[in-house]
Length: 161
Image (cartoon, rainbow, N blue to C red; front, side, top):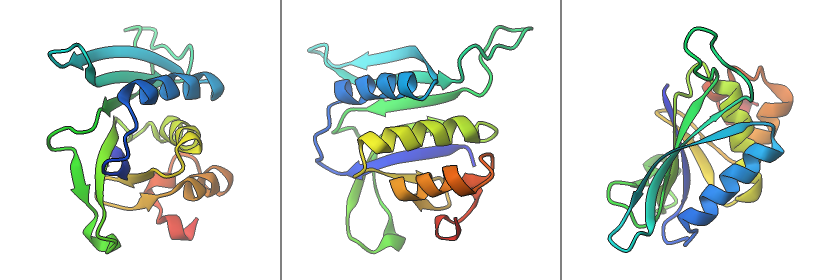
């Protein structure tokens, strides 16, 4: 498992600027470090996509000065081509928008859980889909923080937490 998707119902109208601001605030509040990455803008200079790195503070590899426990978070502004999905097995008929895509989840499960819990606390209407596996809500993430081994939470059915 390599990716997690933070989904919101289509046409929810949460601006990318607000999402990025919330990500930075969540990092401050949860003792994580955010590192700005690339930004893509449209012809009017409106941000349409950006990437951020999120890690534990002061975690550096002595050989390469690269942060350990880092996840990459891609943030998208709706609408964006190829960022919509239907979770057929949920049978709710809803179309979801990939608001955030988190890469490098494998071996960074604790950073991912910490970030996602605090982010969904600000946006409880969102859900997290772990690629090929389960969908987690804010209450699932809260149970994972309290009851699971933090490094295996995303490999466990949220109903069994």
